[in-house]
Amino acid sequence: MGKKVTVVGAGFYGSTTAQRLAEYDIFETVVLTDIIDGKPAGLALDINQSRSIEGFETKVVGVSTGPNGEGYEAIEGSDVVVVTAGLPRKPGMSRMDLLEVNAKIVRQVAENIAKYAPNAVVIVVSNPVDEMTALAQLATQFPKNRVFGQAGVLDTARFTNFIAEELNVPVKSVKALTLGSHGDTMVPVPSRCTVDGKPLSELLPAEKIEELVVRTRNGGAEVVALLKTGSAYYAPSAAAARMAKAVAEDSGEVVPVCAWVDGEYGISGVYLGVEAELGATGIRKVVEDKLTDSELAGLKEAAEAVRAKQADVADL
Ligand code: APR
Image (cartoon, rainbow, N blue to C red; front, side, top):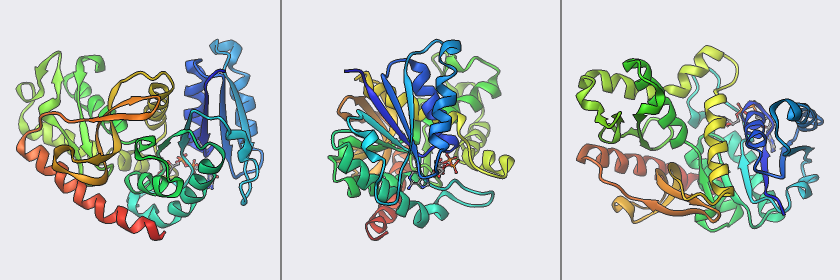
């Protein structure tokens, strides 16, 4: 049987993720769900009508779900489920301001995933993502390797873009990395940033690198401030769709994700942005690499900040 992926939430993030997943043409079916009547079906119809132009055979199925899980049968047999349900930020809001409202949504979604797609790998993108990932694992009771969050692929892509623009080089010559949380304790890792193999520190002064780091950390807020309604979705959906593809293809790709950390870097018992190898089982393993002392200190600080918040989600 062909592969099946579900995207929960047919807003900007979810619909663009569904489109990207369909255009990869590696899935038999992309299921797109939302609580809004008709919206996912309309978007699915629209994406399917682009198949002959873009040249893909994947079928998108749009389903509206009810308050008691009505409609969730459609996700049965999904290999991967991407959770995008929840409110986005408004200008001036931090991701943490979404905690309570999105926790209710993500808990309900996760319970339905556990019921209808008990073998799926779950990728969470709803914000605040570090906390929503922890909550989705709690609510599904899935093994921790099967539930993880999207943040690092996006933050790294933002950092990469800023470096490429600053140096006026192709994005593909830039290698960058961010770890830590998807928020104030994001940890860009300049020691792992190179341009055509040359260390970034030899190409830009420290103050300039710091400026790009700060812009990366505020990358989402910068977009929100310009859009005024809603938050970013082109780069976020590219990140989530790539991760779902890595799982579906059992690729073994190593990417930064919000994964359960159990001893790596001397940190345990928390969902944190680290590099991990992705495959059909979800996180095959967390990959530990060399960090400078200050980067490691930043990662530990991030771990403690998200640990405190993740402890709270059990009650939400
Ligand atoms: N089940 C399914 N879908 C839901 C549920 C639910 N219980 N509750 C809300 N939704 C849907 C909304 O109806 C809406 O269509 O989630 C969608 C959210 O879409 P947008 O408002 O366009 O937000 P989007 O930009 O897609 O962001 C979604 O991703 O980046 C994060 O912070 C962002 O948490 C937000 C999420």
